[in-house]
Amino acid sequence: MEHLGVRKGAWTEEEDILLRKCIEKFGEGKWRQVPFKAGLRRCHKSCRLRWLTYLKPGIKRGEFAEDEVDLIIRLHKLLGNKWSLIAGRLPGRTSNDVKNYWNCHLSRRLTMQKGAQSQIKSINTTTANAAVATKIIMPKPHSFSPNSKWLSGAGPSTIATQVPKMSNNPMLESPQEESTVWWKSLLAYVDQEDHTWWPKSTEVGQEKDLLQSFVAEEMEMMGKDEDKATVENGFGELDNMLLDVDLWGLFET
DNA sequence: AAGGAGCCCAACCGCAATTAC
DNA sequence: CGTAATTGCGGTTGGGCTCCT
Image 1: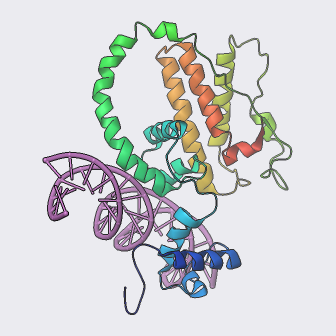
Image 2 (image 1 turned 45 degrees about the vertical axis):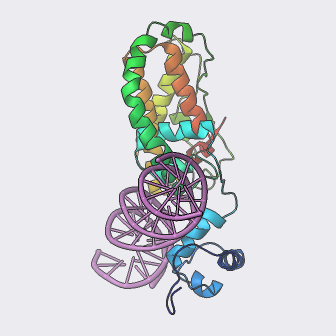
Image 3 (image 1 turned 90 degrees about the vertical axis):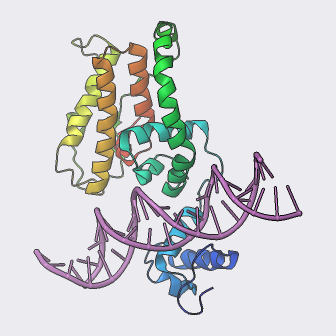
């Protein structure tokens, strides 16, 4: 315990109560002022971290579910150590949690697996065709919602015409091909500049990066003549995963 | 029982990014 | 514009716990 100045180390229950009361009263933000308002001898950064990683309502604690782990692995493969971005896809999880989980449980496990995997792959190729019969998640088309929160006011009324709807285009041979074209078009659209009606340029950039990574991965698989079920599953997962992203607030499902 | 090795996770630190002025 | 203040991010640390010898 420091005589003067700020306290460090683990938070006590009393401190938690003071911080919680302060934020309930004044709201989140203005972290510089929080220690004074709350009557805490903590630095503002410590207060912010405590709130965001522990006290804030809705934070999920305890074991990561299987699907959460799976998502972490997939996202980390594409995004690297972008913990806040990864955590953004896991409701209730903080970037600190995800980072800790990765460092403790996954980084080691995955490096160990890598060696073993190449051996398994050669065995599995012979039985791969049998797995095609498993459930195929088809990509879902989206059209723009007139009630979208981002489209109010000066929103681009023409946007709906720029991203093609799924249609019965006779030029396209399969639903798979059709949805691929749809994803490509969307990507091209997102790639354009001047989306001033979007909330923040960086957020758009992040969603765009994510989208590009996933679509690129799927395109690559198609190029490699991966079996159709695998590719369709990939697009399906991509679609499901991004449904809760702000970007998809633009669409009705 | 003791102690030490290893694990887990909350919290810290430095710096980058963003916002305010 | 520039720069100061503020916020956010990710690497890292260290304390407490469990397990093993």
